Image (cartoon, chains in turn orange, green):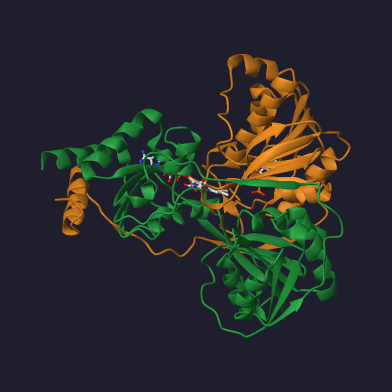
Length: 247
Length: 312
Ligand SMILES: Cc1cc2nc3c(=O)[nH]c(=O)nc-3n(C[C@H](O)[C@H](O)[C@H](O)COP(=O)(O)OP(=O)(O)OC[C@H]3O[C@@H](n4cnc5c(N)ncnc54)[C@H](O)[C@@H]3O)c2cc1C
Ligand SMILES: Nc1ncnc2c1ncn2[C@@H]1O[C@H](COP(=O)(O)O)[C@@H](O)[C@H]1O
């Protein structure tokens, strides 16, 4: 099984993120970057399949992606392709440069994450499937490989899932929780140093959307309970008593 | 503007988001609903109350949703009808096939849209950074495809549109085959019936700390639930997950500990009678839905709460 996995080096939205002075781009000065959470599960799934069936796992990243690609190699991926393009918010451009970089590769499956934790588009994987004319399924929560086909469960609303079967080659986007991603071992990091990390110079040709404005959302703010921890706890308990929620 | 809204249905029921798409369509111009399935007469009649025109696409092969067949028939319809804007629900179905459809239409796409303006070209607003930042995106060409977040376009007008059979069938069989639906897992605790829920998020940090939440739930007479990462990490069973891919709860008290308030979570708890959130990040979107907020480390506050509840 040869599997290509897309892995984004992405800022954690729970760290300090904001809007830059131009009012059109993100300010990520002190944000914490790591492999996009959904991609961690995708890489793990691909490595598990390789460990069971043999084959190759190739990871592909667009942007300032070196740390994440190294991490994937340390987890057990075989080689990496780095595309040093800042594609910004236009998912089409990200997919386009990935397409250019991998169009001559042979593969059985491509895995993407269901969503990037920073941009939350849920687009790049499916756009790539369309460019390659591949059958696809999103939000995959389990998969089983058969003879030339893969049977997957995909998540739908309310805890339900849908079981579908796809011919290979195909593209799947992976939902979190599909497995328990491994930690990177010291051995893994050592081995990763000898693995291939190739840079591919391609540039996006198509631009589909443009940022008109970026800003903090207007939100209705909760009434804040302040004080030291003991005072805060006392105030919370007073609210609960007042509402008859506790005796 | 000529707008096409693709309706969604499952288990014999129309997804109410389909009407919200038409609310937006009516604001933008001429509203067309498209409904795809084996026998969609009932859905078409409902949609006609909110659309200028309803297009039925019926075939035995369309009984269950299949992205390849949906894209196939939609492309046939759109080639003839030339929409300016295509609206699709940002759901497990819609979010799956919309980007593929957009590529085949050579149309820009914006996903998970919560606002649209057409005053100066088409501009769609959406969140990035899991609800912390908003961006207005201008599409660079028409037609365009937008997937729409549930709840963003609730108000609309009534219509009395005519229903037409589009006379379209899939042009070829799909590679992907639908097999079956799988029921949600059932566990021993039904969080949808609880009056008091202590919900923990990634901020609880570790499996070992779940017991702190359990102690608090016990002292309050409630149960423990969690956000998706807590379930993904195996710290709580799947049937305790609150959110679009878990359960929708409406308890008398929802105490959110270390939960950021991503939309997919909020959809599962926003109608709770009283929401109190403890989060150390003052910018956390959870403070947009909570009635009361505490900006603090949960590990400072929860032990104090426990002391006071036990000592009272
Ligand atoms: C298709 C799809 C379906 C999904 N379905 C669901 C679903 O059903 N339910 C769901 O919950 N999510 C769902 N998600 C995931 C969702 O997008 C978010 O990733 C998730 O809700 C985040 O969980 P969280 O708030 O626990 O974690 P995070 O977003 O990482 O937030 C953790 C929060 O804890 C705070 N914190 C950290 N430490 C402390 C501390 N010591 N004291 C106080 N605060 C602290 C941080 O400031 C942060 O705000 C879904 C996503 C997709 C794409
Ligand atoms: N810059 C990138 N580099 C590599 N993969 C990416 C990049 N951006 C998006 N992807 C992949 O596409 C998925 C969906 O991203 P998005 O469409 O931004 O939500 C991610 O989970 C990744 O697998």
